[in-house]
Image (tube, rainbow, N blue to C red; front, side, top):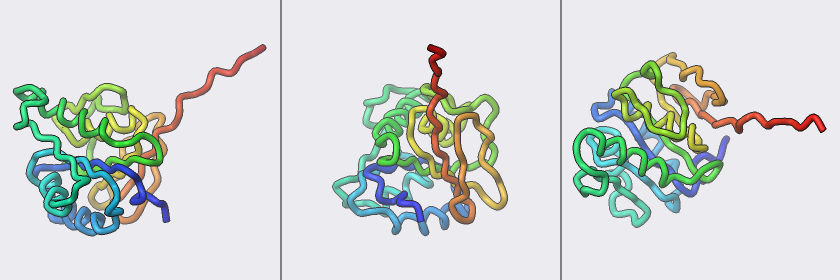
Length: 177
């Protein structure tokens, strides 16, 4: 088994109204996480609330709240909050973003990049931004849904509904001389 839950930092992103299956998948996953990991999560209902409730009282819980005023105002404050949450996760093997989006289909135009673009889905935007900035992604999708066919991402099944996405390094330019 992969040592996903020995990661030094984990972040969470997901639907404000998760399906019962998504909530159950998350609740099965949370007890597997090391109590020594730093946990980053947003301020929304749904998946964020389940994570905050599970880790309440933990000194390693970081909550990124739009109401704090740190991320400005308006709809863009939610994107800035999500960017900060993802950036708080360690890169490489030490970090992991866990995402449970409301839709099993990624919006058109969303792909791994070093900038945030969610096309209306904060969860898919966070997932793409995490991979584009060198973080691993554990993605839950319902039923037989498959992850997006994103270039430069290696996907592996990790149990019913779960997909582990690993960002691949950029191709190296070989010298001819």
